[in-house]
Length: 626
Image 1 (tube, rainbow, N blue to C red):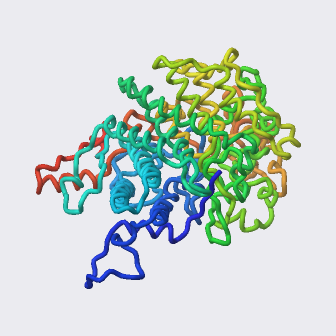
Image 2 (image 1 turned 90 degrees about the vertical axis):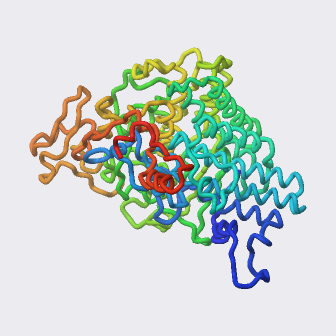
Image 3 (image 1 turned 30 degrees about the horizontal axis):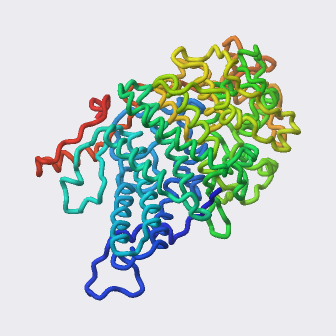
């Protein structure tokens, strides 16, 4: 169980990788540079700490929402907004923020921008570690640990770049600022890059310390992230028909092994209720592997809890497609049960407990779909609805922490990797014991007092011999894989995983409202009620001002629009205001991001003065869009 704070010192130390030139040759006594910084393990640790915000972003800070839960993870098939839905990227952008160092993750890939600054930092650390060992500043054990850390982060950085762009230039050493040909080298094949990533990860898994002290990256944290990265790559090869079975199996095997390392450690277990994982003000323990803690005392705060406080507007918000994906607590799908009761008061006690823990139990006008997400605030925070919020629940002064890495992801990565290997590459079949160690272990989490008081029950265990028969299942997905994917969707609602999952599964078509009309619908509501919010705020959509604007859809698909007289008929699935499908739906090109115009043009400019520099090629499908 780990946590971390960010300090100005830990961020500023990244500047120390470079050197400064002054007018005097005499070294400074009170400042550190390359001549005196790389002399002890403490300084190496400080250098690495400066990267935590980039890889363990949590709730970000202040008003920052880049790559945060909910606010930074709303481009997928789980969420719907008023008016036209946000479309897929239609043209090649100018720069995609590629010059910025920070958590400027691409909205429409879920992965990294075209930026190699972090690659350079990790290559710098690798170079300095070699120097430190040669100069006697690091013993073998310390050298191997920090080299494992450096290679792990370099590998993870490259895995993210590949997830966005496919082929990228690979650098395994620092390129001199005078080496123009090195700086503008061609893109290397994805396979070459990921083989190098595999090697970095193998070194990390064998050399990073099992325990390096509280708050610091250890082997289990690295293994958790390695399982994530290699599951993506192995499943990409599988579902995108890359045709390289050997590599796919190798990457998936590494994902499986890395996840098993964490599972077998005995350090983590499902002993904390779901809501407390995200709303607690200190590390709740249990399944938490890496925790980002916030603090008033250190002036490290965020704004994400305020977006779950029932007052702050939510748009996009959870849609009917997401609602229907939640399994009933008897282990069957809603359509298997023949259950067409979608009233929220019914859903919170009938569906898997994560539904109740994630959403408010009544319609809420602050949500674009009337289904309001409360996942990222504690049970106390919502009780201030209708009044004044204490600082920890409003504005950008929130201080609940975030579980950046947790066992649930690890076990779901593990069982999915095993299932893909079994279905495609001759691996051992997934057994009941495997399901019990993964999906069923998650389902057996404790319930908190609020859930118990409402009548919420744990979901029945998944039985390998009696899998749900979901009529909505894709023909190209096995019943077991469908349930593994369902479990990920329920577990990771608004946690930055969904878009990456759709991309690696080759399922971006799930985001097309013309294929799934439930994407454009919200919660089931009875608009004749005037106090749906259930606390203090009056809720009334059926006003004169809303004549011709408010609509619901019946179970049979009939749409009813309020005309000023048909109050009693305004019961059904809510249609967000002027809701409309995306202009641009998923095309094959959207599985990779385009390389921005500035990068392409810079390569062209360099080629004109140096023919040894090749003109970089755009990703498939984007050439004509430039």
